[in-house]
Image (cartoon, rainbow, N blue to C red; front, side, top):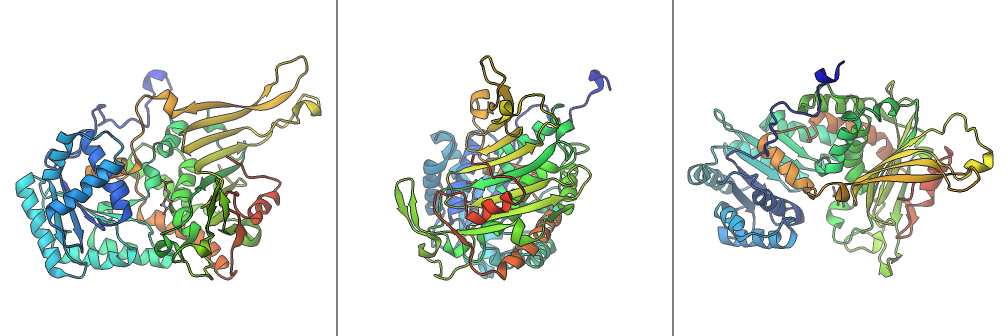
Length: 510
Ligand code: BG6
């Protein structure tokens, strides 16, 4: 193919490099008193407004039990913005946003409250020109999804007329296992067609996750070696140094695998392993993600290929920290895992035989998320054995956070008169290469919801495939009792190291 005819698959022909600005619309948030709303959603909405990406008449409506007026809710949003927004505070942006803020008081089983919400939305269409286009953000426990969906249907809020749209945004957890995920999808799809359902996996909103697609499909040099012929194994790590104080209500009985492997880590794996999409259209991307998730199975036997742990009390960063069982709200006999490591196989021609190790944990050494593609050793080294004693395996490491970037590790001659080869790294850092800072994941995803751009949202089938992969492991773990202990600041329990040692490999300590 000549260079002239070469088509860039990442370039959407409609994109004339203009900023993507949402058309007339409003957003209703259920669960506005929760942490996610205050720390992420409200600041992201302000940041979008500040960047000029929301329509002038944008409307934000909160729905909650509190006895608030519009002004009280506006004050809550104001404080959240002041405290957590990424971009600088500008009074004129805030004033314009505040004009479109409304609050509806009520509980989820209160028909009148939903009728009042429907009335508020109609008024907004007249007062703010939102044009009948509204998204409903369910930042609420999944147990409340059915009743809210039913209320949205009953009050007519879910029906779209003519060219207007109605969309629903759902936060994880998307179920507890395959069966409950199917039920949940059914409930939501009874009210909203699949194309109007936006399931948030905030990792897909992170710039570096999307950069995996750029790295692989906008370049020529990685794809030829991105397969089982050259790749030895892949390690995907999401480590956090924080504990679970204050989150018992959500986390107990859920654990690390359901909390982040089922969604964030499996999606990272999918982005790492998909075949090149026919185009960059939402449909092509999702088709490829579904294909690769369908081809993925957990490696057996689970006693050898998985590990799970629970942090105990101890010292971390010079501070005394409690173990999970001493954290407020956790039962003293909780068997919830705070560390999980699993081995997956992707049964395709490209990946057969390459193990994918996924691990995540709380109270680990540091906060870091990365995808490390580790390559096989060169088949023949024409050096003395002593010259290459310090030569490891080549690796491409995509750092999702913090210090977003890419590191390539390879062997290099140590300066001097003897031939000695040692590992060195070549670093690309977003912070150094680009002047503009990355938007928060929620900015990107909320904007995509308002634009109706579904590429970065998992569809029902992906969610179900993910549970199919995880369920057998979770079932086996459920019969095992207590997870293995690990000290705060460690990289998980001893069993995690043993799991890799059995295959002759070691975990990276990023
Ligand atoms: C959430 C999990 O989805 O992701 C949390 O429920 C976790 O347990 C969080 O702490 C981490 O997100 P981030 O963007 O800080 O890596």
